[in-house]
Length: 73
Image: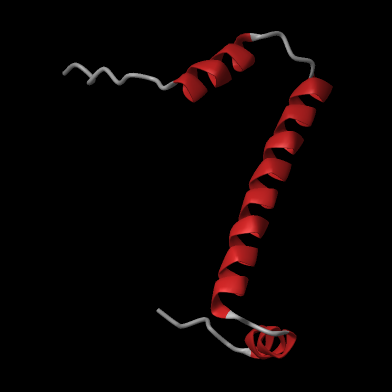
């Protein structure tokens, strides 16, 4: 059975080019750290936007931090 051919977007192609380069272990670790920082900043920005849209306060944060939201299966 043949696999469907997918078209890679520009971002995917650029990442493949990066992976194709000869990076040392230290350079690869630096790339991974940069990517993690990028994602962390994005999550923080989205959380801040949600916080502001809902008009939450420090008291709301305290209350939310003390809530038990886990459920059993």
